[in-house]
Every structure is written in C-alpha cells, then in structure tokens.
Amino acid sequence: MEEQDSWIAHFCAMPGHEYFCEVSDDFIEDDFNLTGLNQMVPNYKQALEMILDVEASSDEEDDPEDDEYDSRQYYSGRRYRNRANVNIEAIHANAQLLYGLIHQRFITSRNGIQVMYYKYAHNHFGHCPRVNCGFARTIPCGFSDVPGVDTVKLFCPSCLDIYVPPNNRFLRIDGAFFGSTFPSLFLMSYPELDVSGPHPGATGTKGVQKKVKEKTEGSSRVINGVVEANFAPGLGKGNIYDMKIYGFKVSEKAKSGPRMKWLRDRPEDMKELDEVENFSNQDSRYVVDVSNNAREENSDVTMQDDEIAGR
Image (cartoon, rainbow, N blue to C red):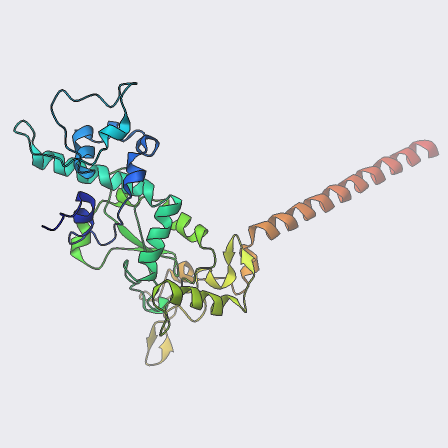
C-alpha cells in the first residue's frame, strides 16, 4: 500500500499553488518561527496539527503550553483524525492561512531562499510580460505582510516593476503568503544573479550560474551591493518603446504623446546611483566648504584688526 502524501505536499501540488515551496517540518516545529501566529489564525492548534499530520489522541491531550510538556511528543507525526466535534472545512481553511504565513517566514530564511532559488532557476515563477525585458524571470511578492490586503504579484528585477500573474488561478493566492521582503532579500542573497532575459541553453541552476559568470566577467563593478550589469538591465536607452506615425516619433507635447518615459529611464553612467561614492563626494565638498568659510572668516577678522590698528 502506497504511503499517502503529506498535507504540505498535497497543498503545494494543488492547481494555483505552483509558487509555493514545501516548508520543512523542522522549521514548523521550531516555536520561535511561529511566534505571534496563534493570534492571527483561528483554531491555531488544530490547524497546526493538520499541517503536520498530527493526530490528537483525545480531547484531554496534554497542553503544549505546559512547561513540563515535551514538544517532540506533540509533533510525533501521528495522522490527524476527523472528529465529530470538529468542523474540518473550517480547520482546513485555517490550516491554509497558517501555512501561508509560515511560508512567508520560511522563504526569508537561508534554507527557504535556497529552495526558492531552485524554483527561480527552473522558471517556476514565469517571465516578465514586458517585451523589452526579454523574458526575464520574475519573483513572487506581496504588497503587504498582512493577509487579506491583496493577491500575489510578480516582481521583475529587470524593469523593477510589478505585474499581475498571467493565469487566473493565481488570483486566489494571498500576497501575504510571500510578503514584501522576499524579492529584495532574494536578490541581496545572490548579488551576481543575472536578472536579464534567458539565453539559449541557460536552464536550471547550472545554466543560470554559467550565464552569470559570462555576463559579469567584463563588468564586475558593484553599485549599492549589485553588479552593474544587473542593475535594471531592461531599462534605459534602447529599452523604451518610441511611439511613431509613418516613421516619425510622436512628440511628448502632443495630446497622444508619451508622458511617463522617465519611469523607464536609466542613467547612462551608473556611477550617478552609487550612494557610497555620492556620499563620499558630498562629504568632501562639505569639508572644502567649511575650510573655505573658515578662511574667509579669518580673512575678515584680520582685515578688521588691520583697520582698527590703522586708526
């Protein structure tokens, strides 16, 4: 007899849940990782039991909040049984909410980021719909970390914009299950990750790593913690659509002319965005200005002393 899939595996295999990864039991069993979630999810204990396939032997089971209670016994892996006094549908909905909030925290951990990197490298999150991004891979994210605010969105690191998933089945997924932190933390964890469109033969983690090496060999300058070649490669000159009529560009002053091209603009010299260098130059200018002002004040004092002495 074949062993049944776990609740987590079944949840991640459901249609529309392709963006989710399987959270490890070790992560869920660590109480620190679940801090505060019992205040956000109704029927928290039963929902957690369902996620971990835990079966309560009786209603008089030991309370996990008891100091003398062994948490390893609570998470013993026993199957969750349907009981007459339990609304299974309600608990299942609560379990989905709880797992989504746990998932938000897991994908910002080291192991979670590695799992999501594998999914990113294998195109599990899809591509940017913008033509000038050249099918750049997208990253799932949410506008808020609080459930119920908005559905999941896709962030494109090539044009730095947010898009609605292309399939309606993803519109039922809460954006809080991925959170607002994940895209930035993911890119910071892989600063040399090539975020431009894929080239032929670059599939999987090895293909992505090979492409990163080829692209960054000639451009190793790092700006604000990001390799220059990966700084919004889908923006700037040559990556902005120009409206034309019979071959002539439409003026920005025309009623039907482009108005927001600056949103897709990018400095030709990326040094302009280097915060470290700009701060250093600004600090140097400040020191020079202070020195010049001090010399001018000393000069004025000397002239006043000379005038007084001449009198």
